Amino acid sequence: MADISLILYKNSKAYDISELAENIKWKGRKGSAARTLSVSLVDTEKVKSGIDVTNGDHIVFSFKGEELFRGIVMSQQQSESFKMPITAYDNGIYLANNKDTFVYENKTVHDIFIDICKRFGIKYSEVTATSYKIPELIKSKTTAWDAILDAVSQDFKATGTKYYVCSSKGVLSLLKRRENILQWVLETGGNIISYNYKKSIEDIKTRLKILSDEDTVYAVKKNESLEMKIGIFQDIEKKDDDISQAKLAEQIGETFKKISTPEISLDVEAFGIPDVISGTGVYVKIDPLNINRSFWVDEDTHTFKENSHIMKLKLNSVDE
Image (cartoon, rainbow, N blue to C red; front, side, top):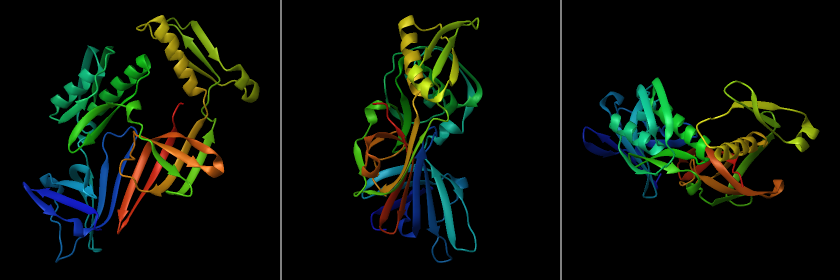
């Protein structure tokens, strides 16, 4: 695989093990703290990588001169097949594998992210400034990743802005999601190999009831035209007293729009584009289905084998 570079860092020394790699899978998904790299290596008496997960070996994977992954090798297997499958995780794994009790008052997502990184010695660089101060966040005996997800969720409920964490060259960043919609185009008759499109109303809601702290009805929002077609499907939420009436009305509107919209998902197999990973977006053109719109990448698996690079994507629709 001429375009592949696989460098093993072992005992402060670098070893090029690119020629030992037979198959490489680089993947990530929405909601996961870390991206992973799975490699099948040749492992014979004459040719060995010398990897030992207990030594803290690290690996850097590059494609066509661009670094795509840097992380710690955490799993290895050996057998009579003379193959060694290994799995490495980027430094997001330190968010998933560290537990503590987290207590914050009037702190932003920006503040919480930096505090957690410092607490566990995790390198970070670009951290998007966030203004909303979360009144209270208490997470007892849980992972750092869970605390960050909770903070991001509370900020989204209050502001409608989405943030996500990513790792690049061994450094974590906190980014604003909408600013990172890449407009790579995937289209039938071009780079799409296969696709599977799904539309579902299994989880749809036609009305939303908001309750006060005393469980009295504060407000009801409904889609009457949709109810005429499919009947009533109701959800209930508690009123948030920590935000203004205007912000509450906006929040109710955004929540209702989300739950009253059919779930649309699309699985695509296409020729690989390294920039297309979970958390980014693509523009999809599928002529037989009259699809011409943007989608979020919820899950991606990039496979490098011999001279090919293929990606499989799970996509979700972007609100226009």
